[in-house]
Length: 56
Image (cartoon, rainbow, N blue to C red):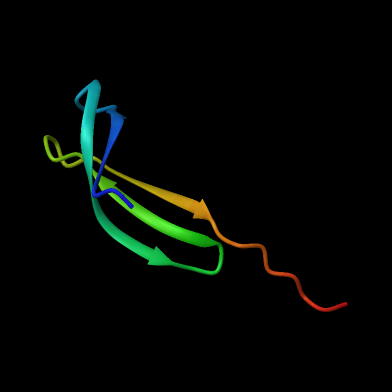
């Protein structure tokens, strides 16, 4: 996974290279936190994980 991601920052009102500040694997998927280095705005994404099937 890349350490930076181009995203629109609503505070800066322009596209910035956000820096990944955290990554955690959870039951729902992978939670990734991104931060704008210019203003400090943060956004969290949850990337889908693998489907888990329960026995019938």
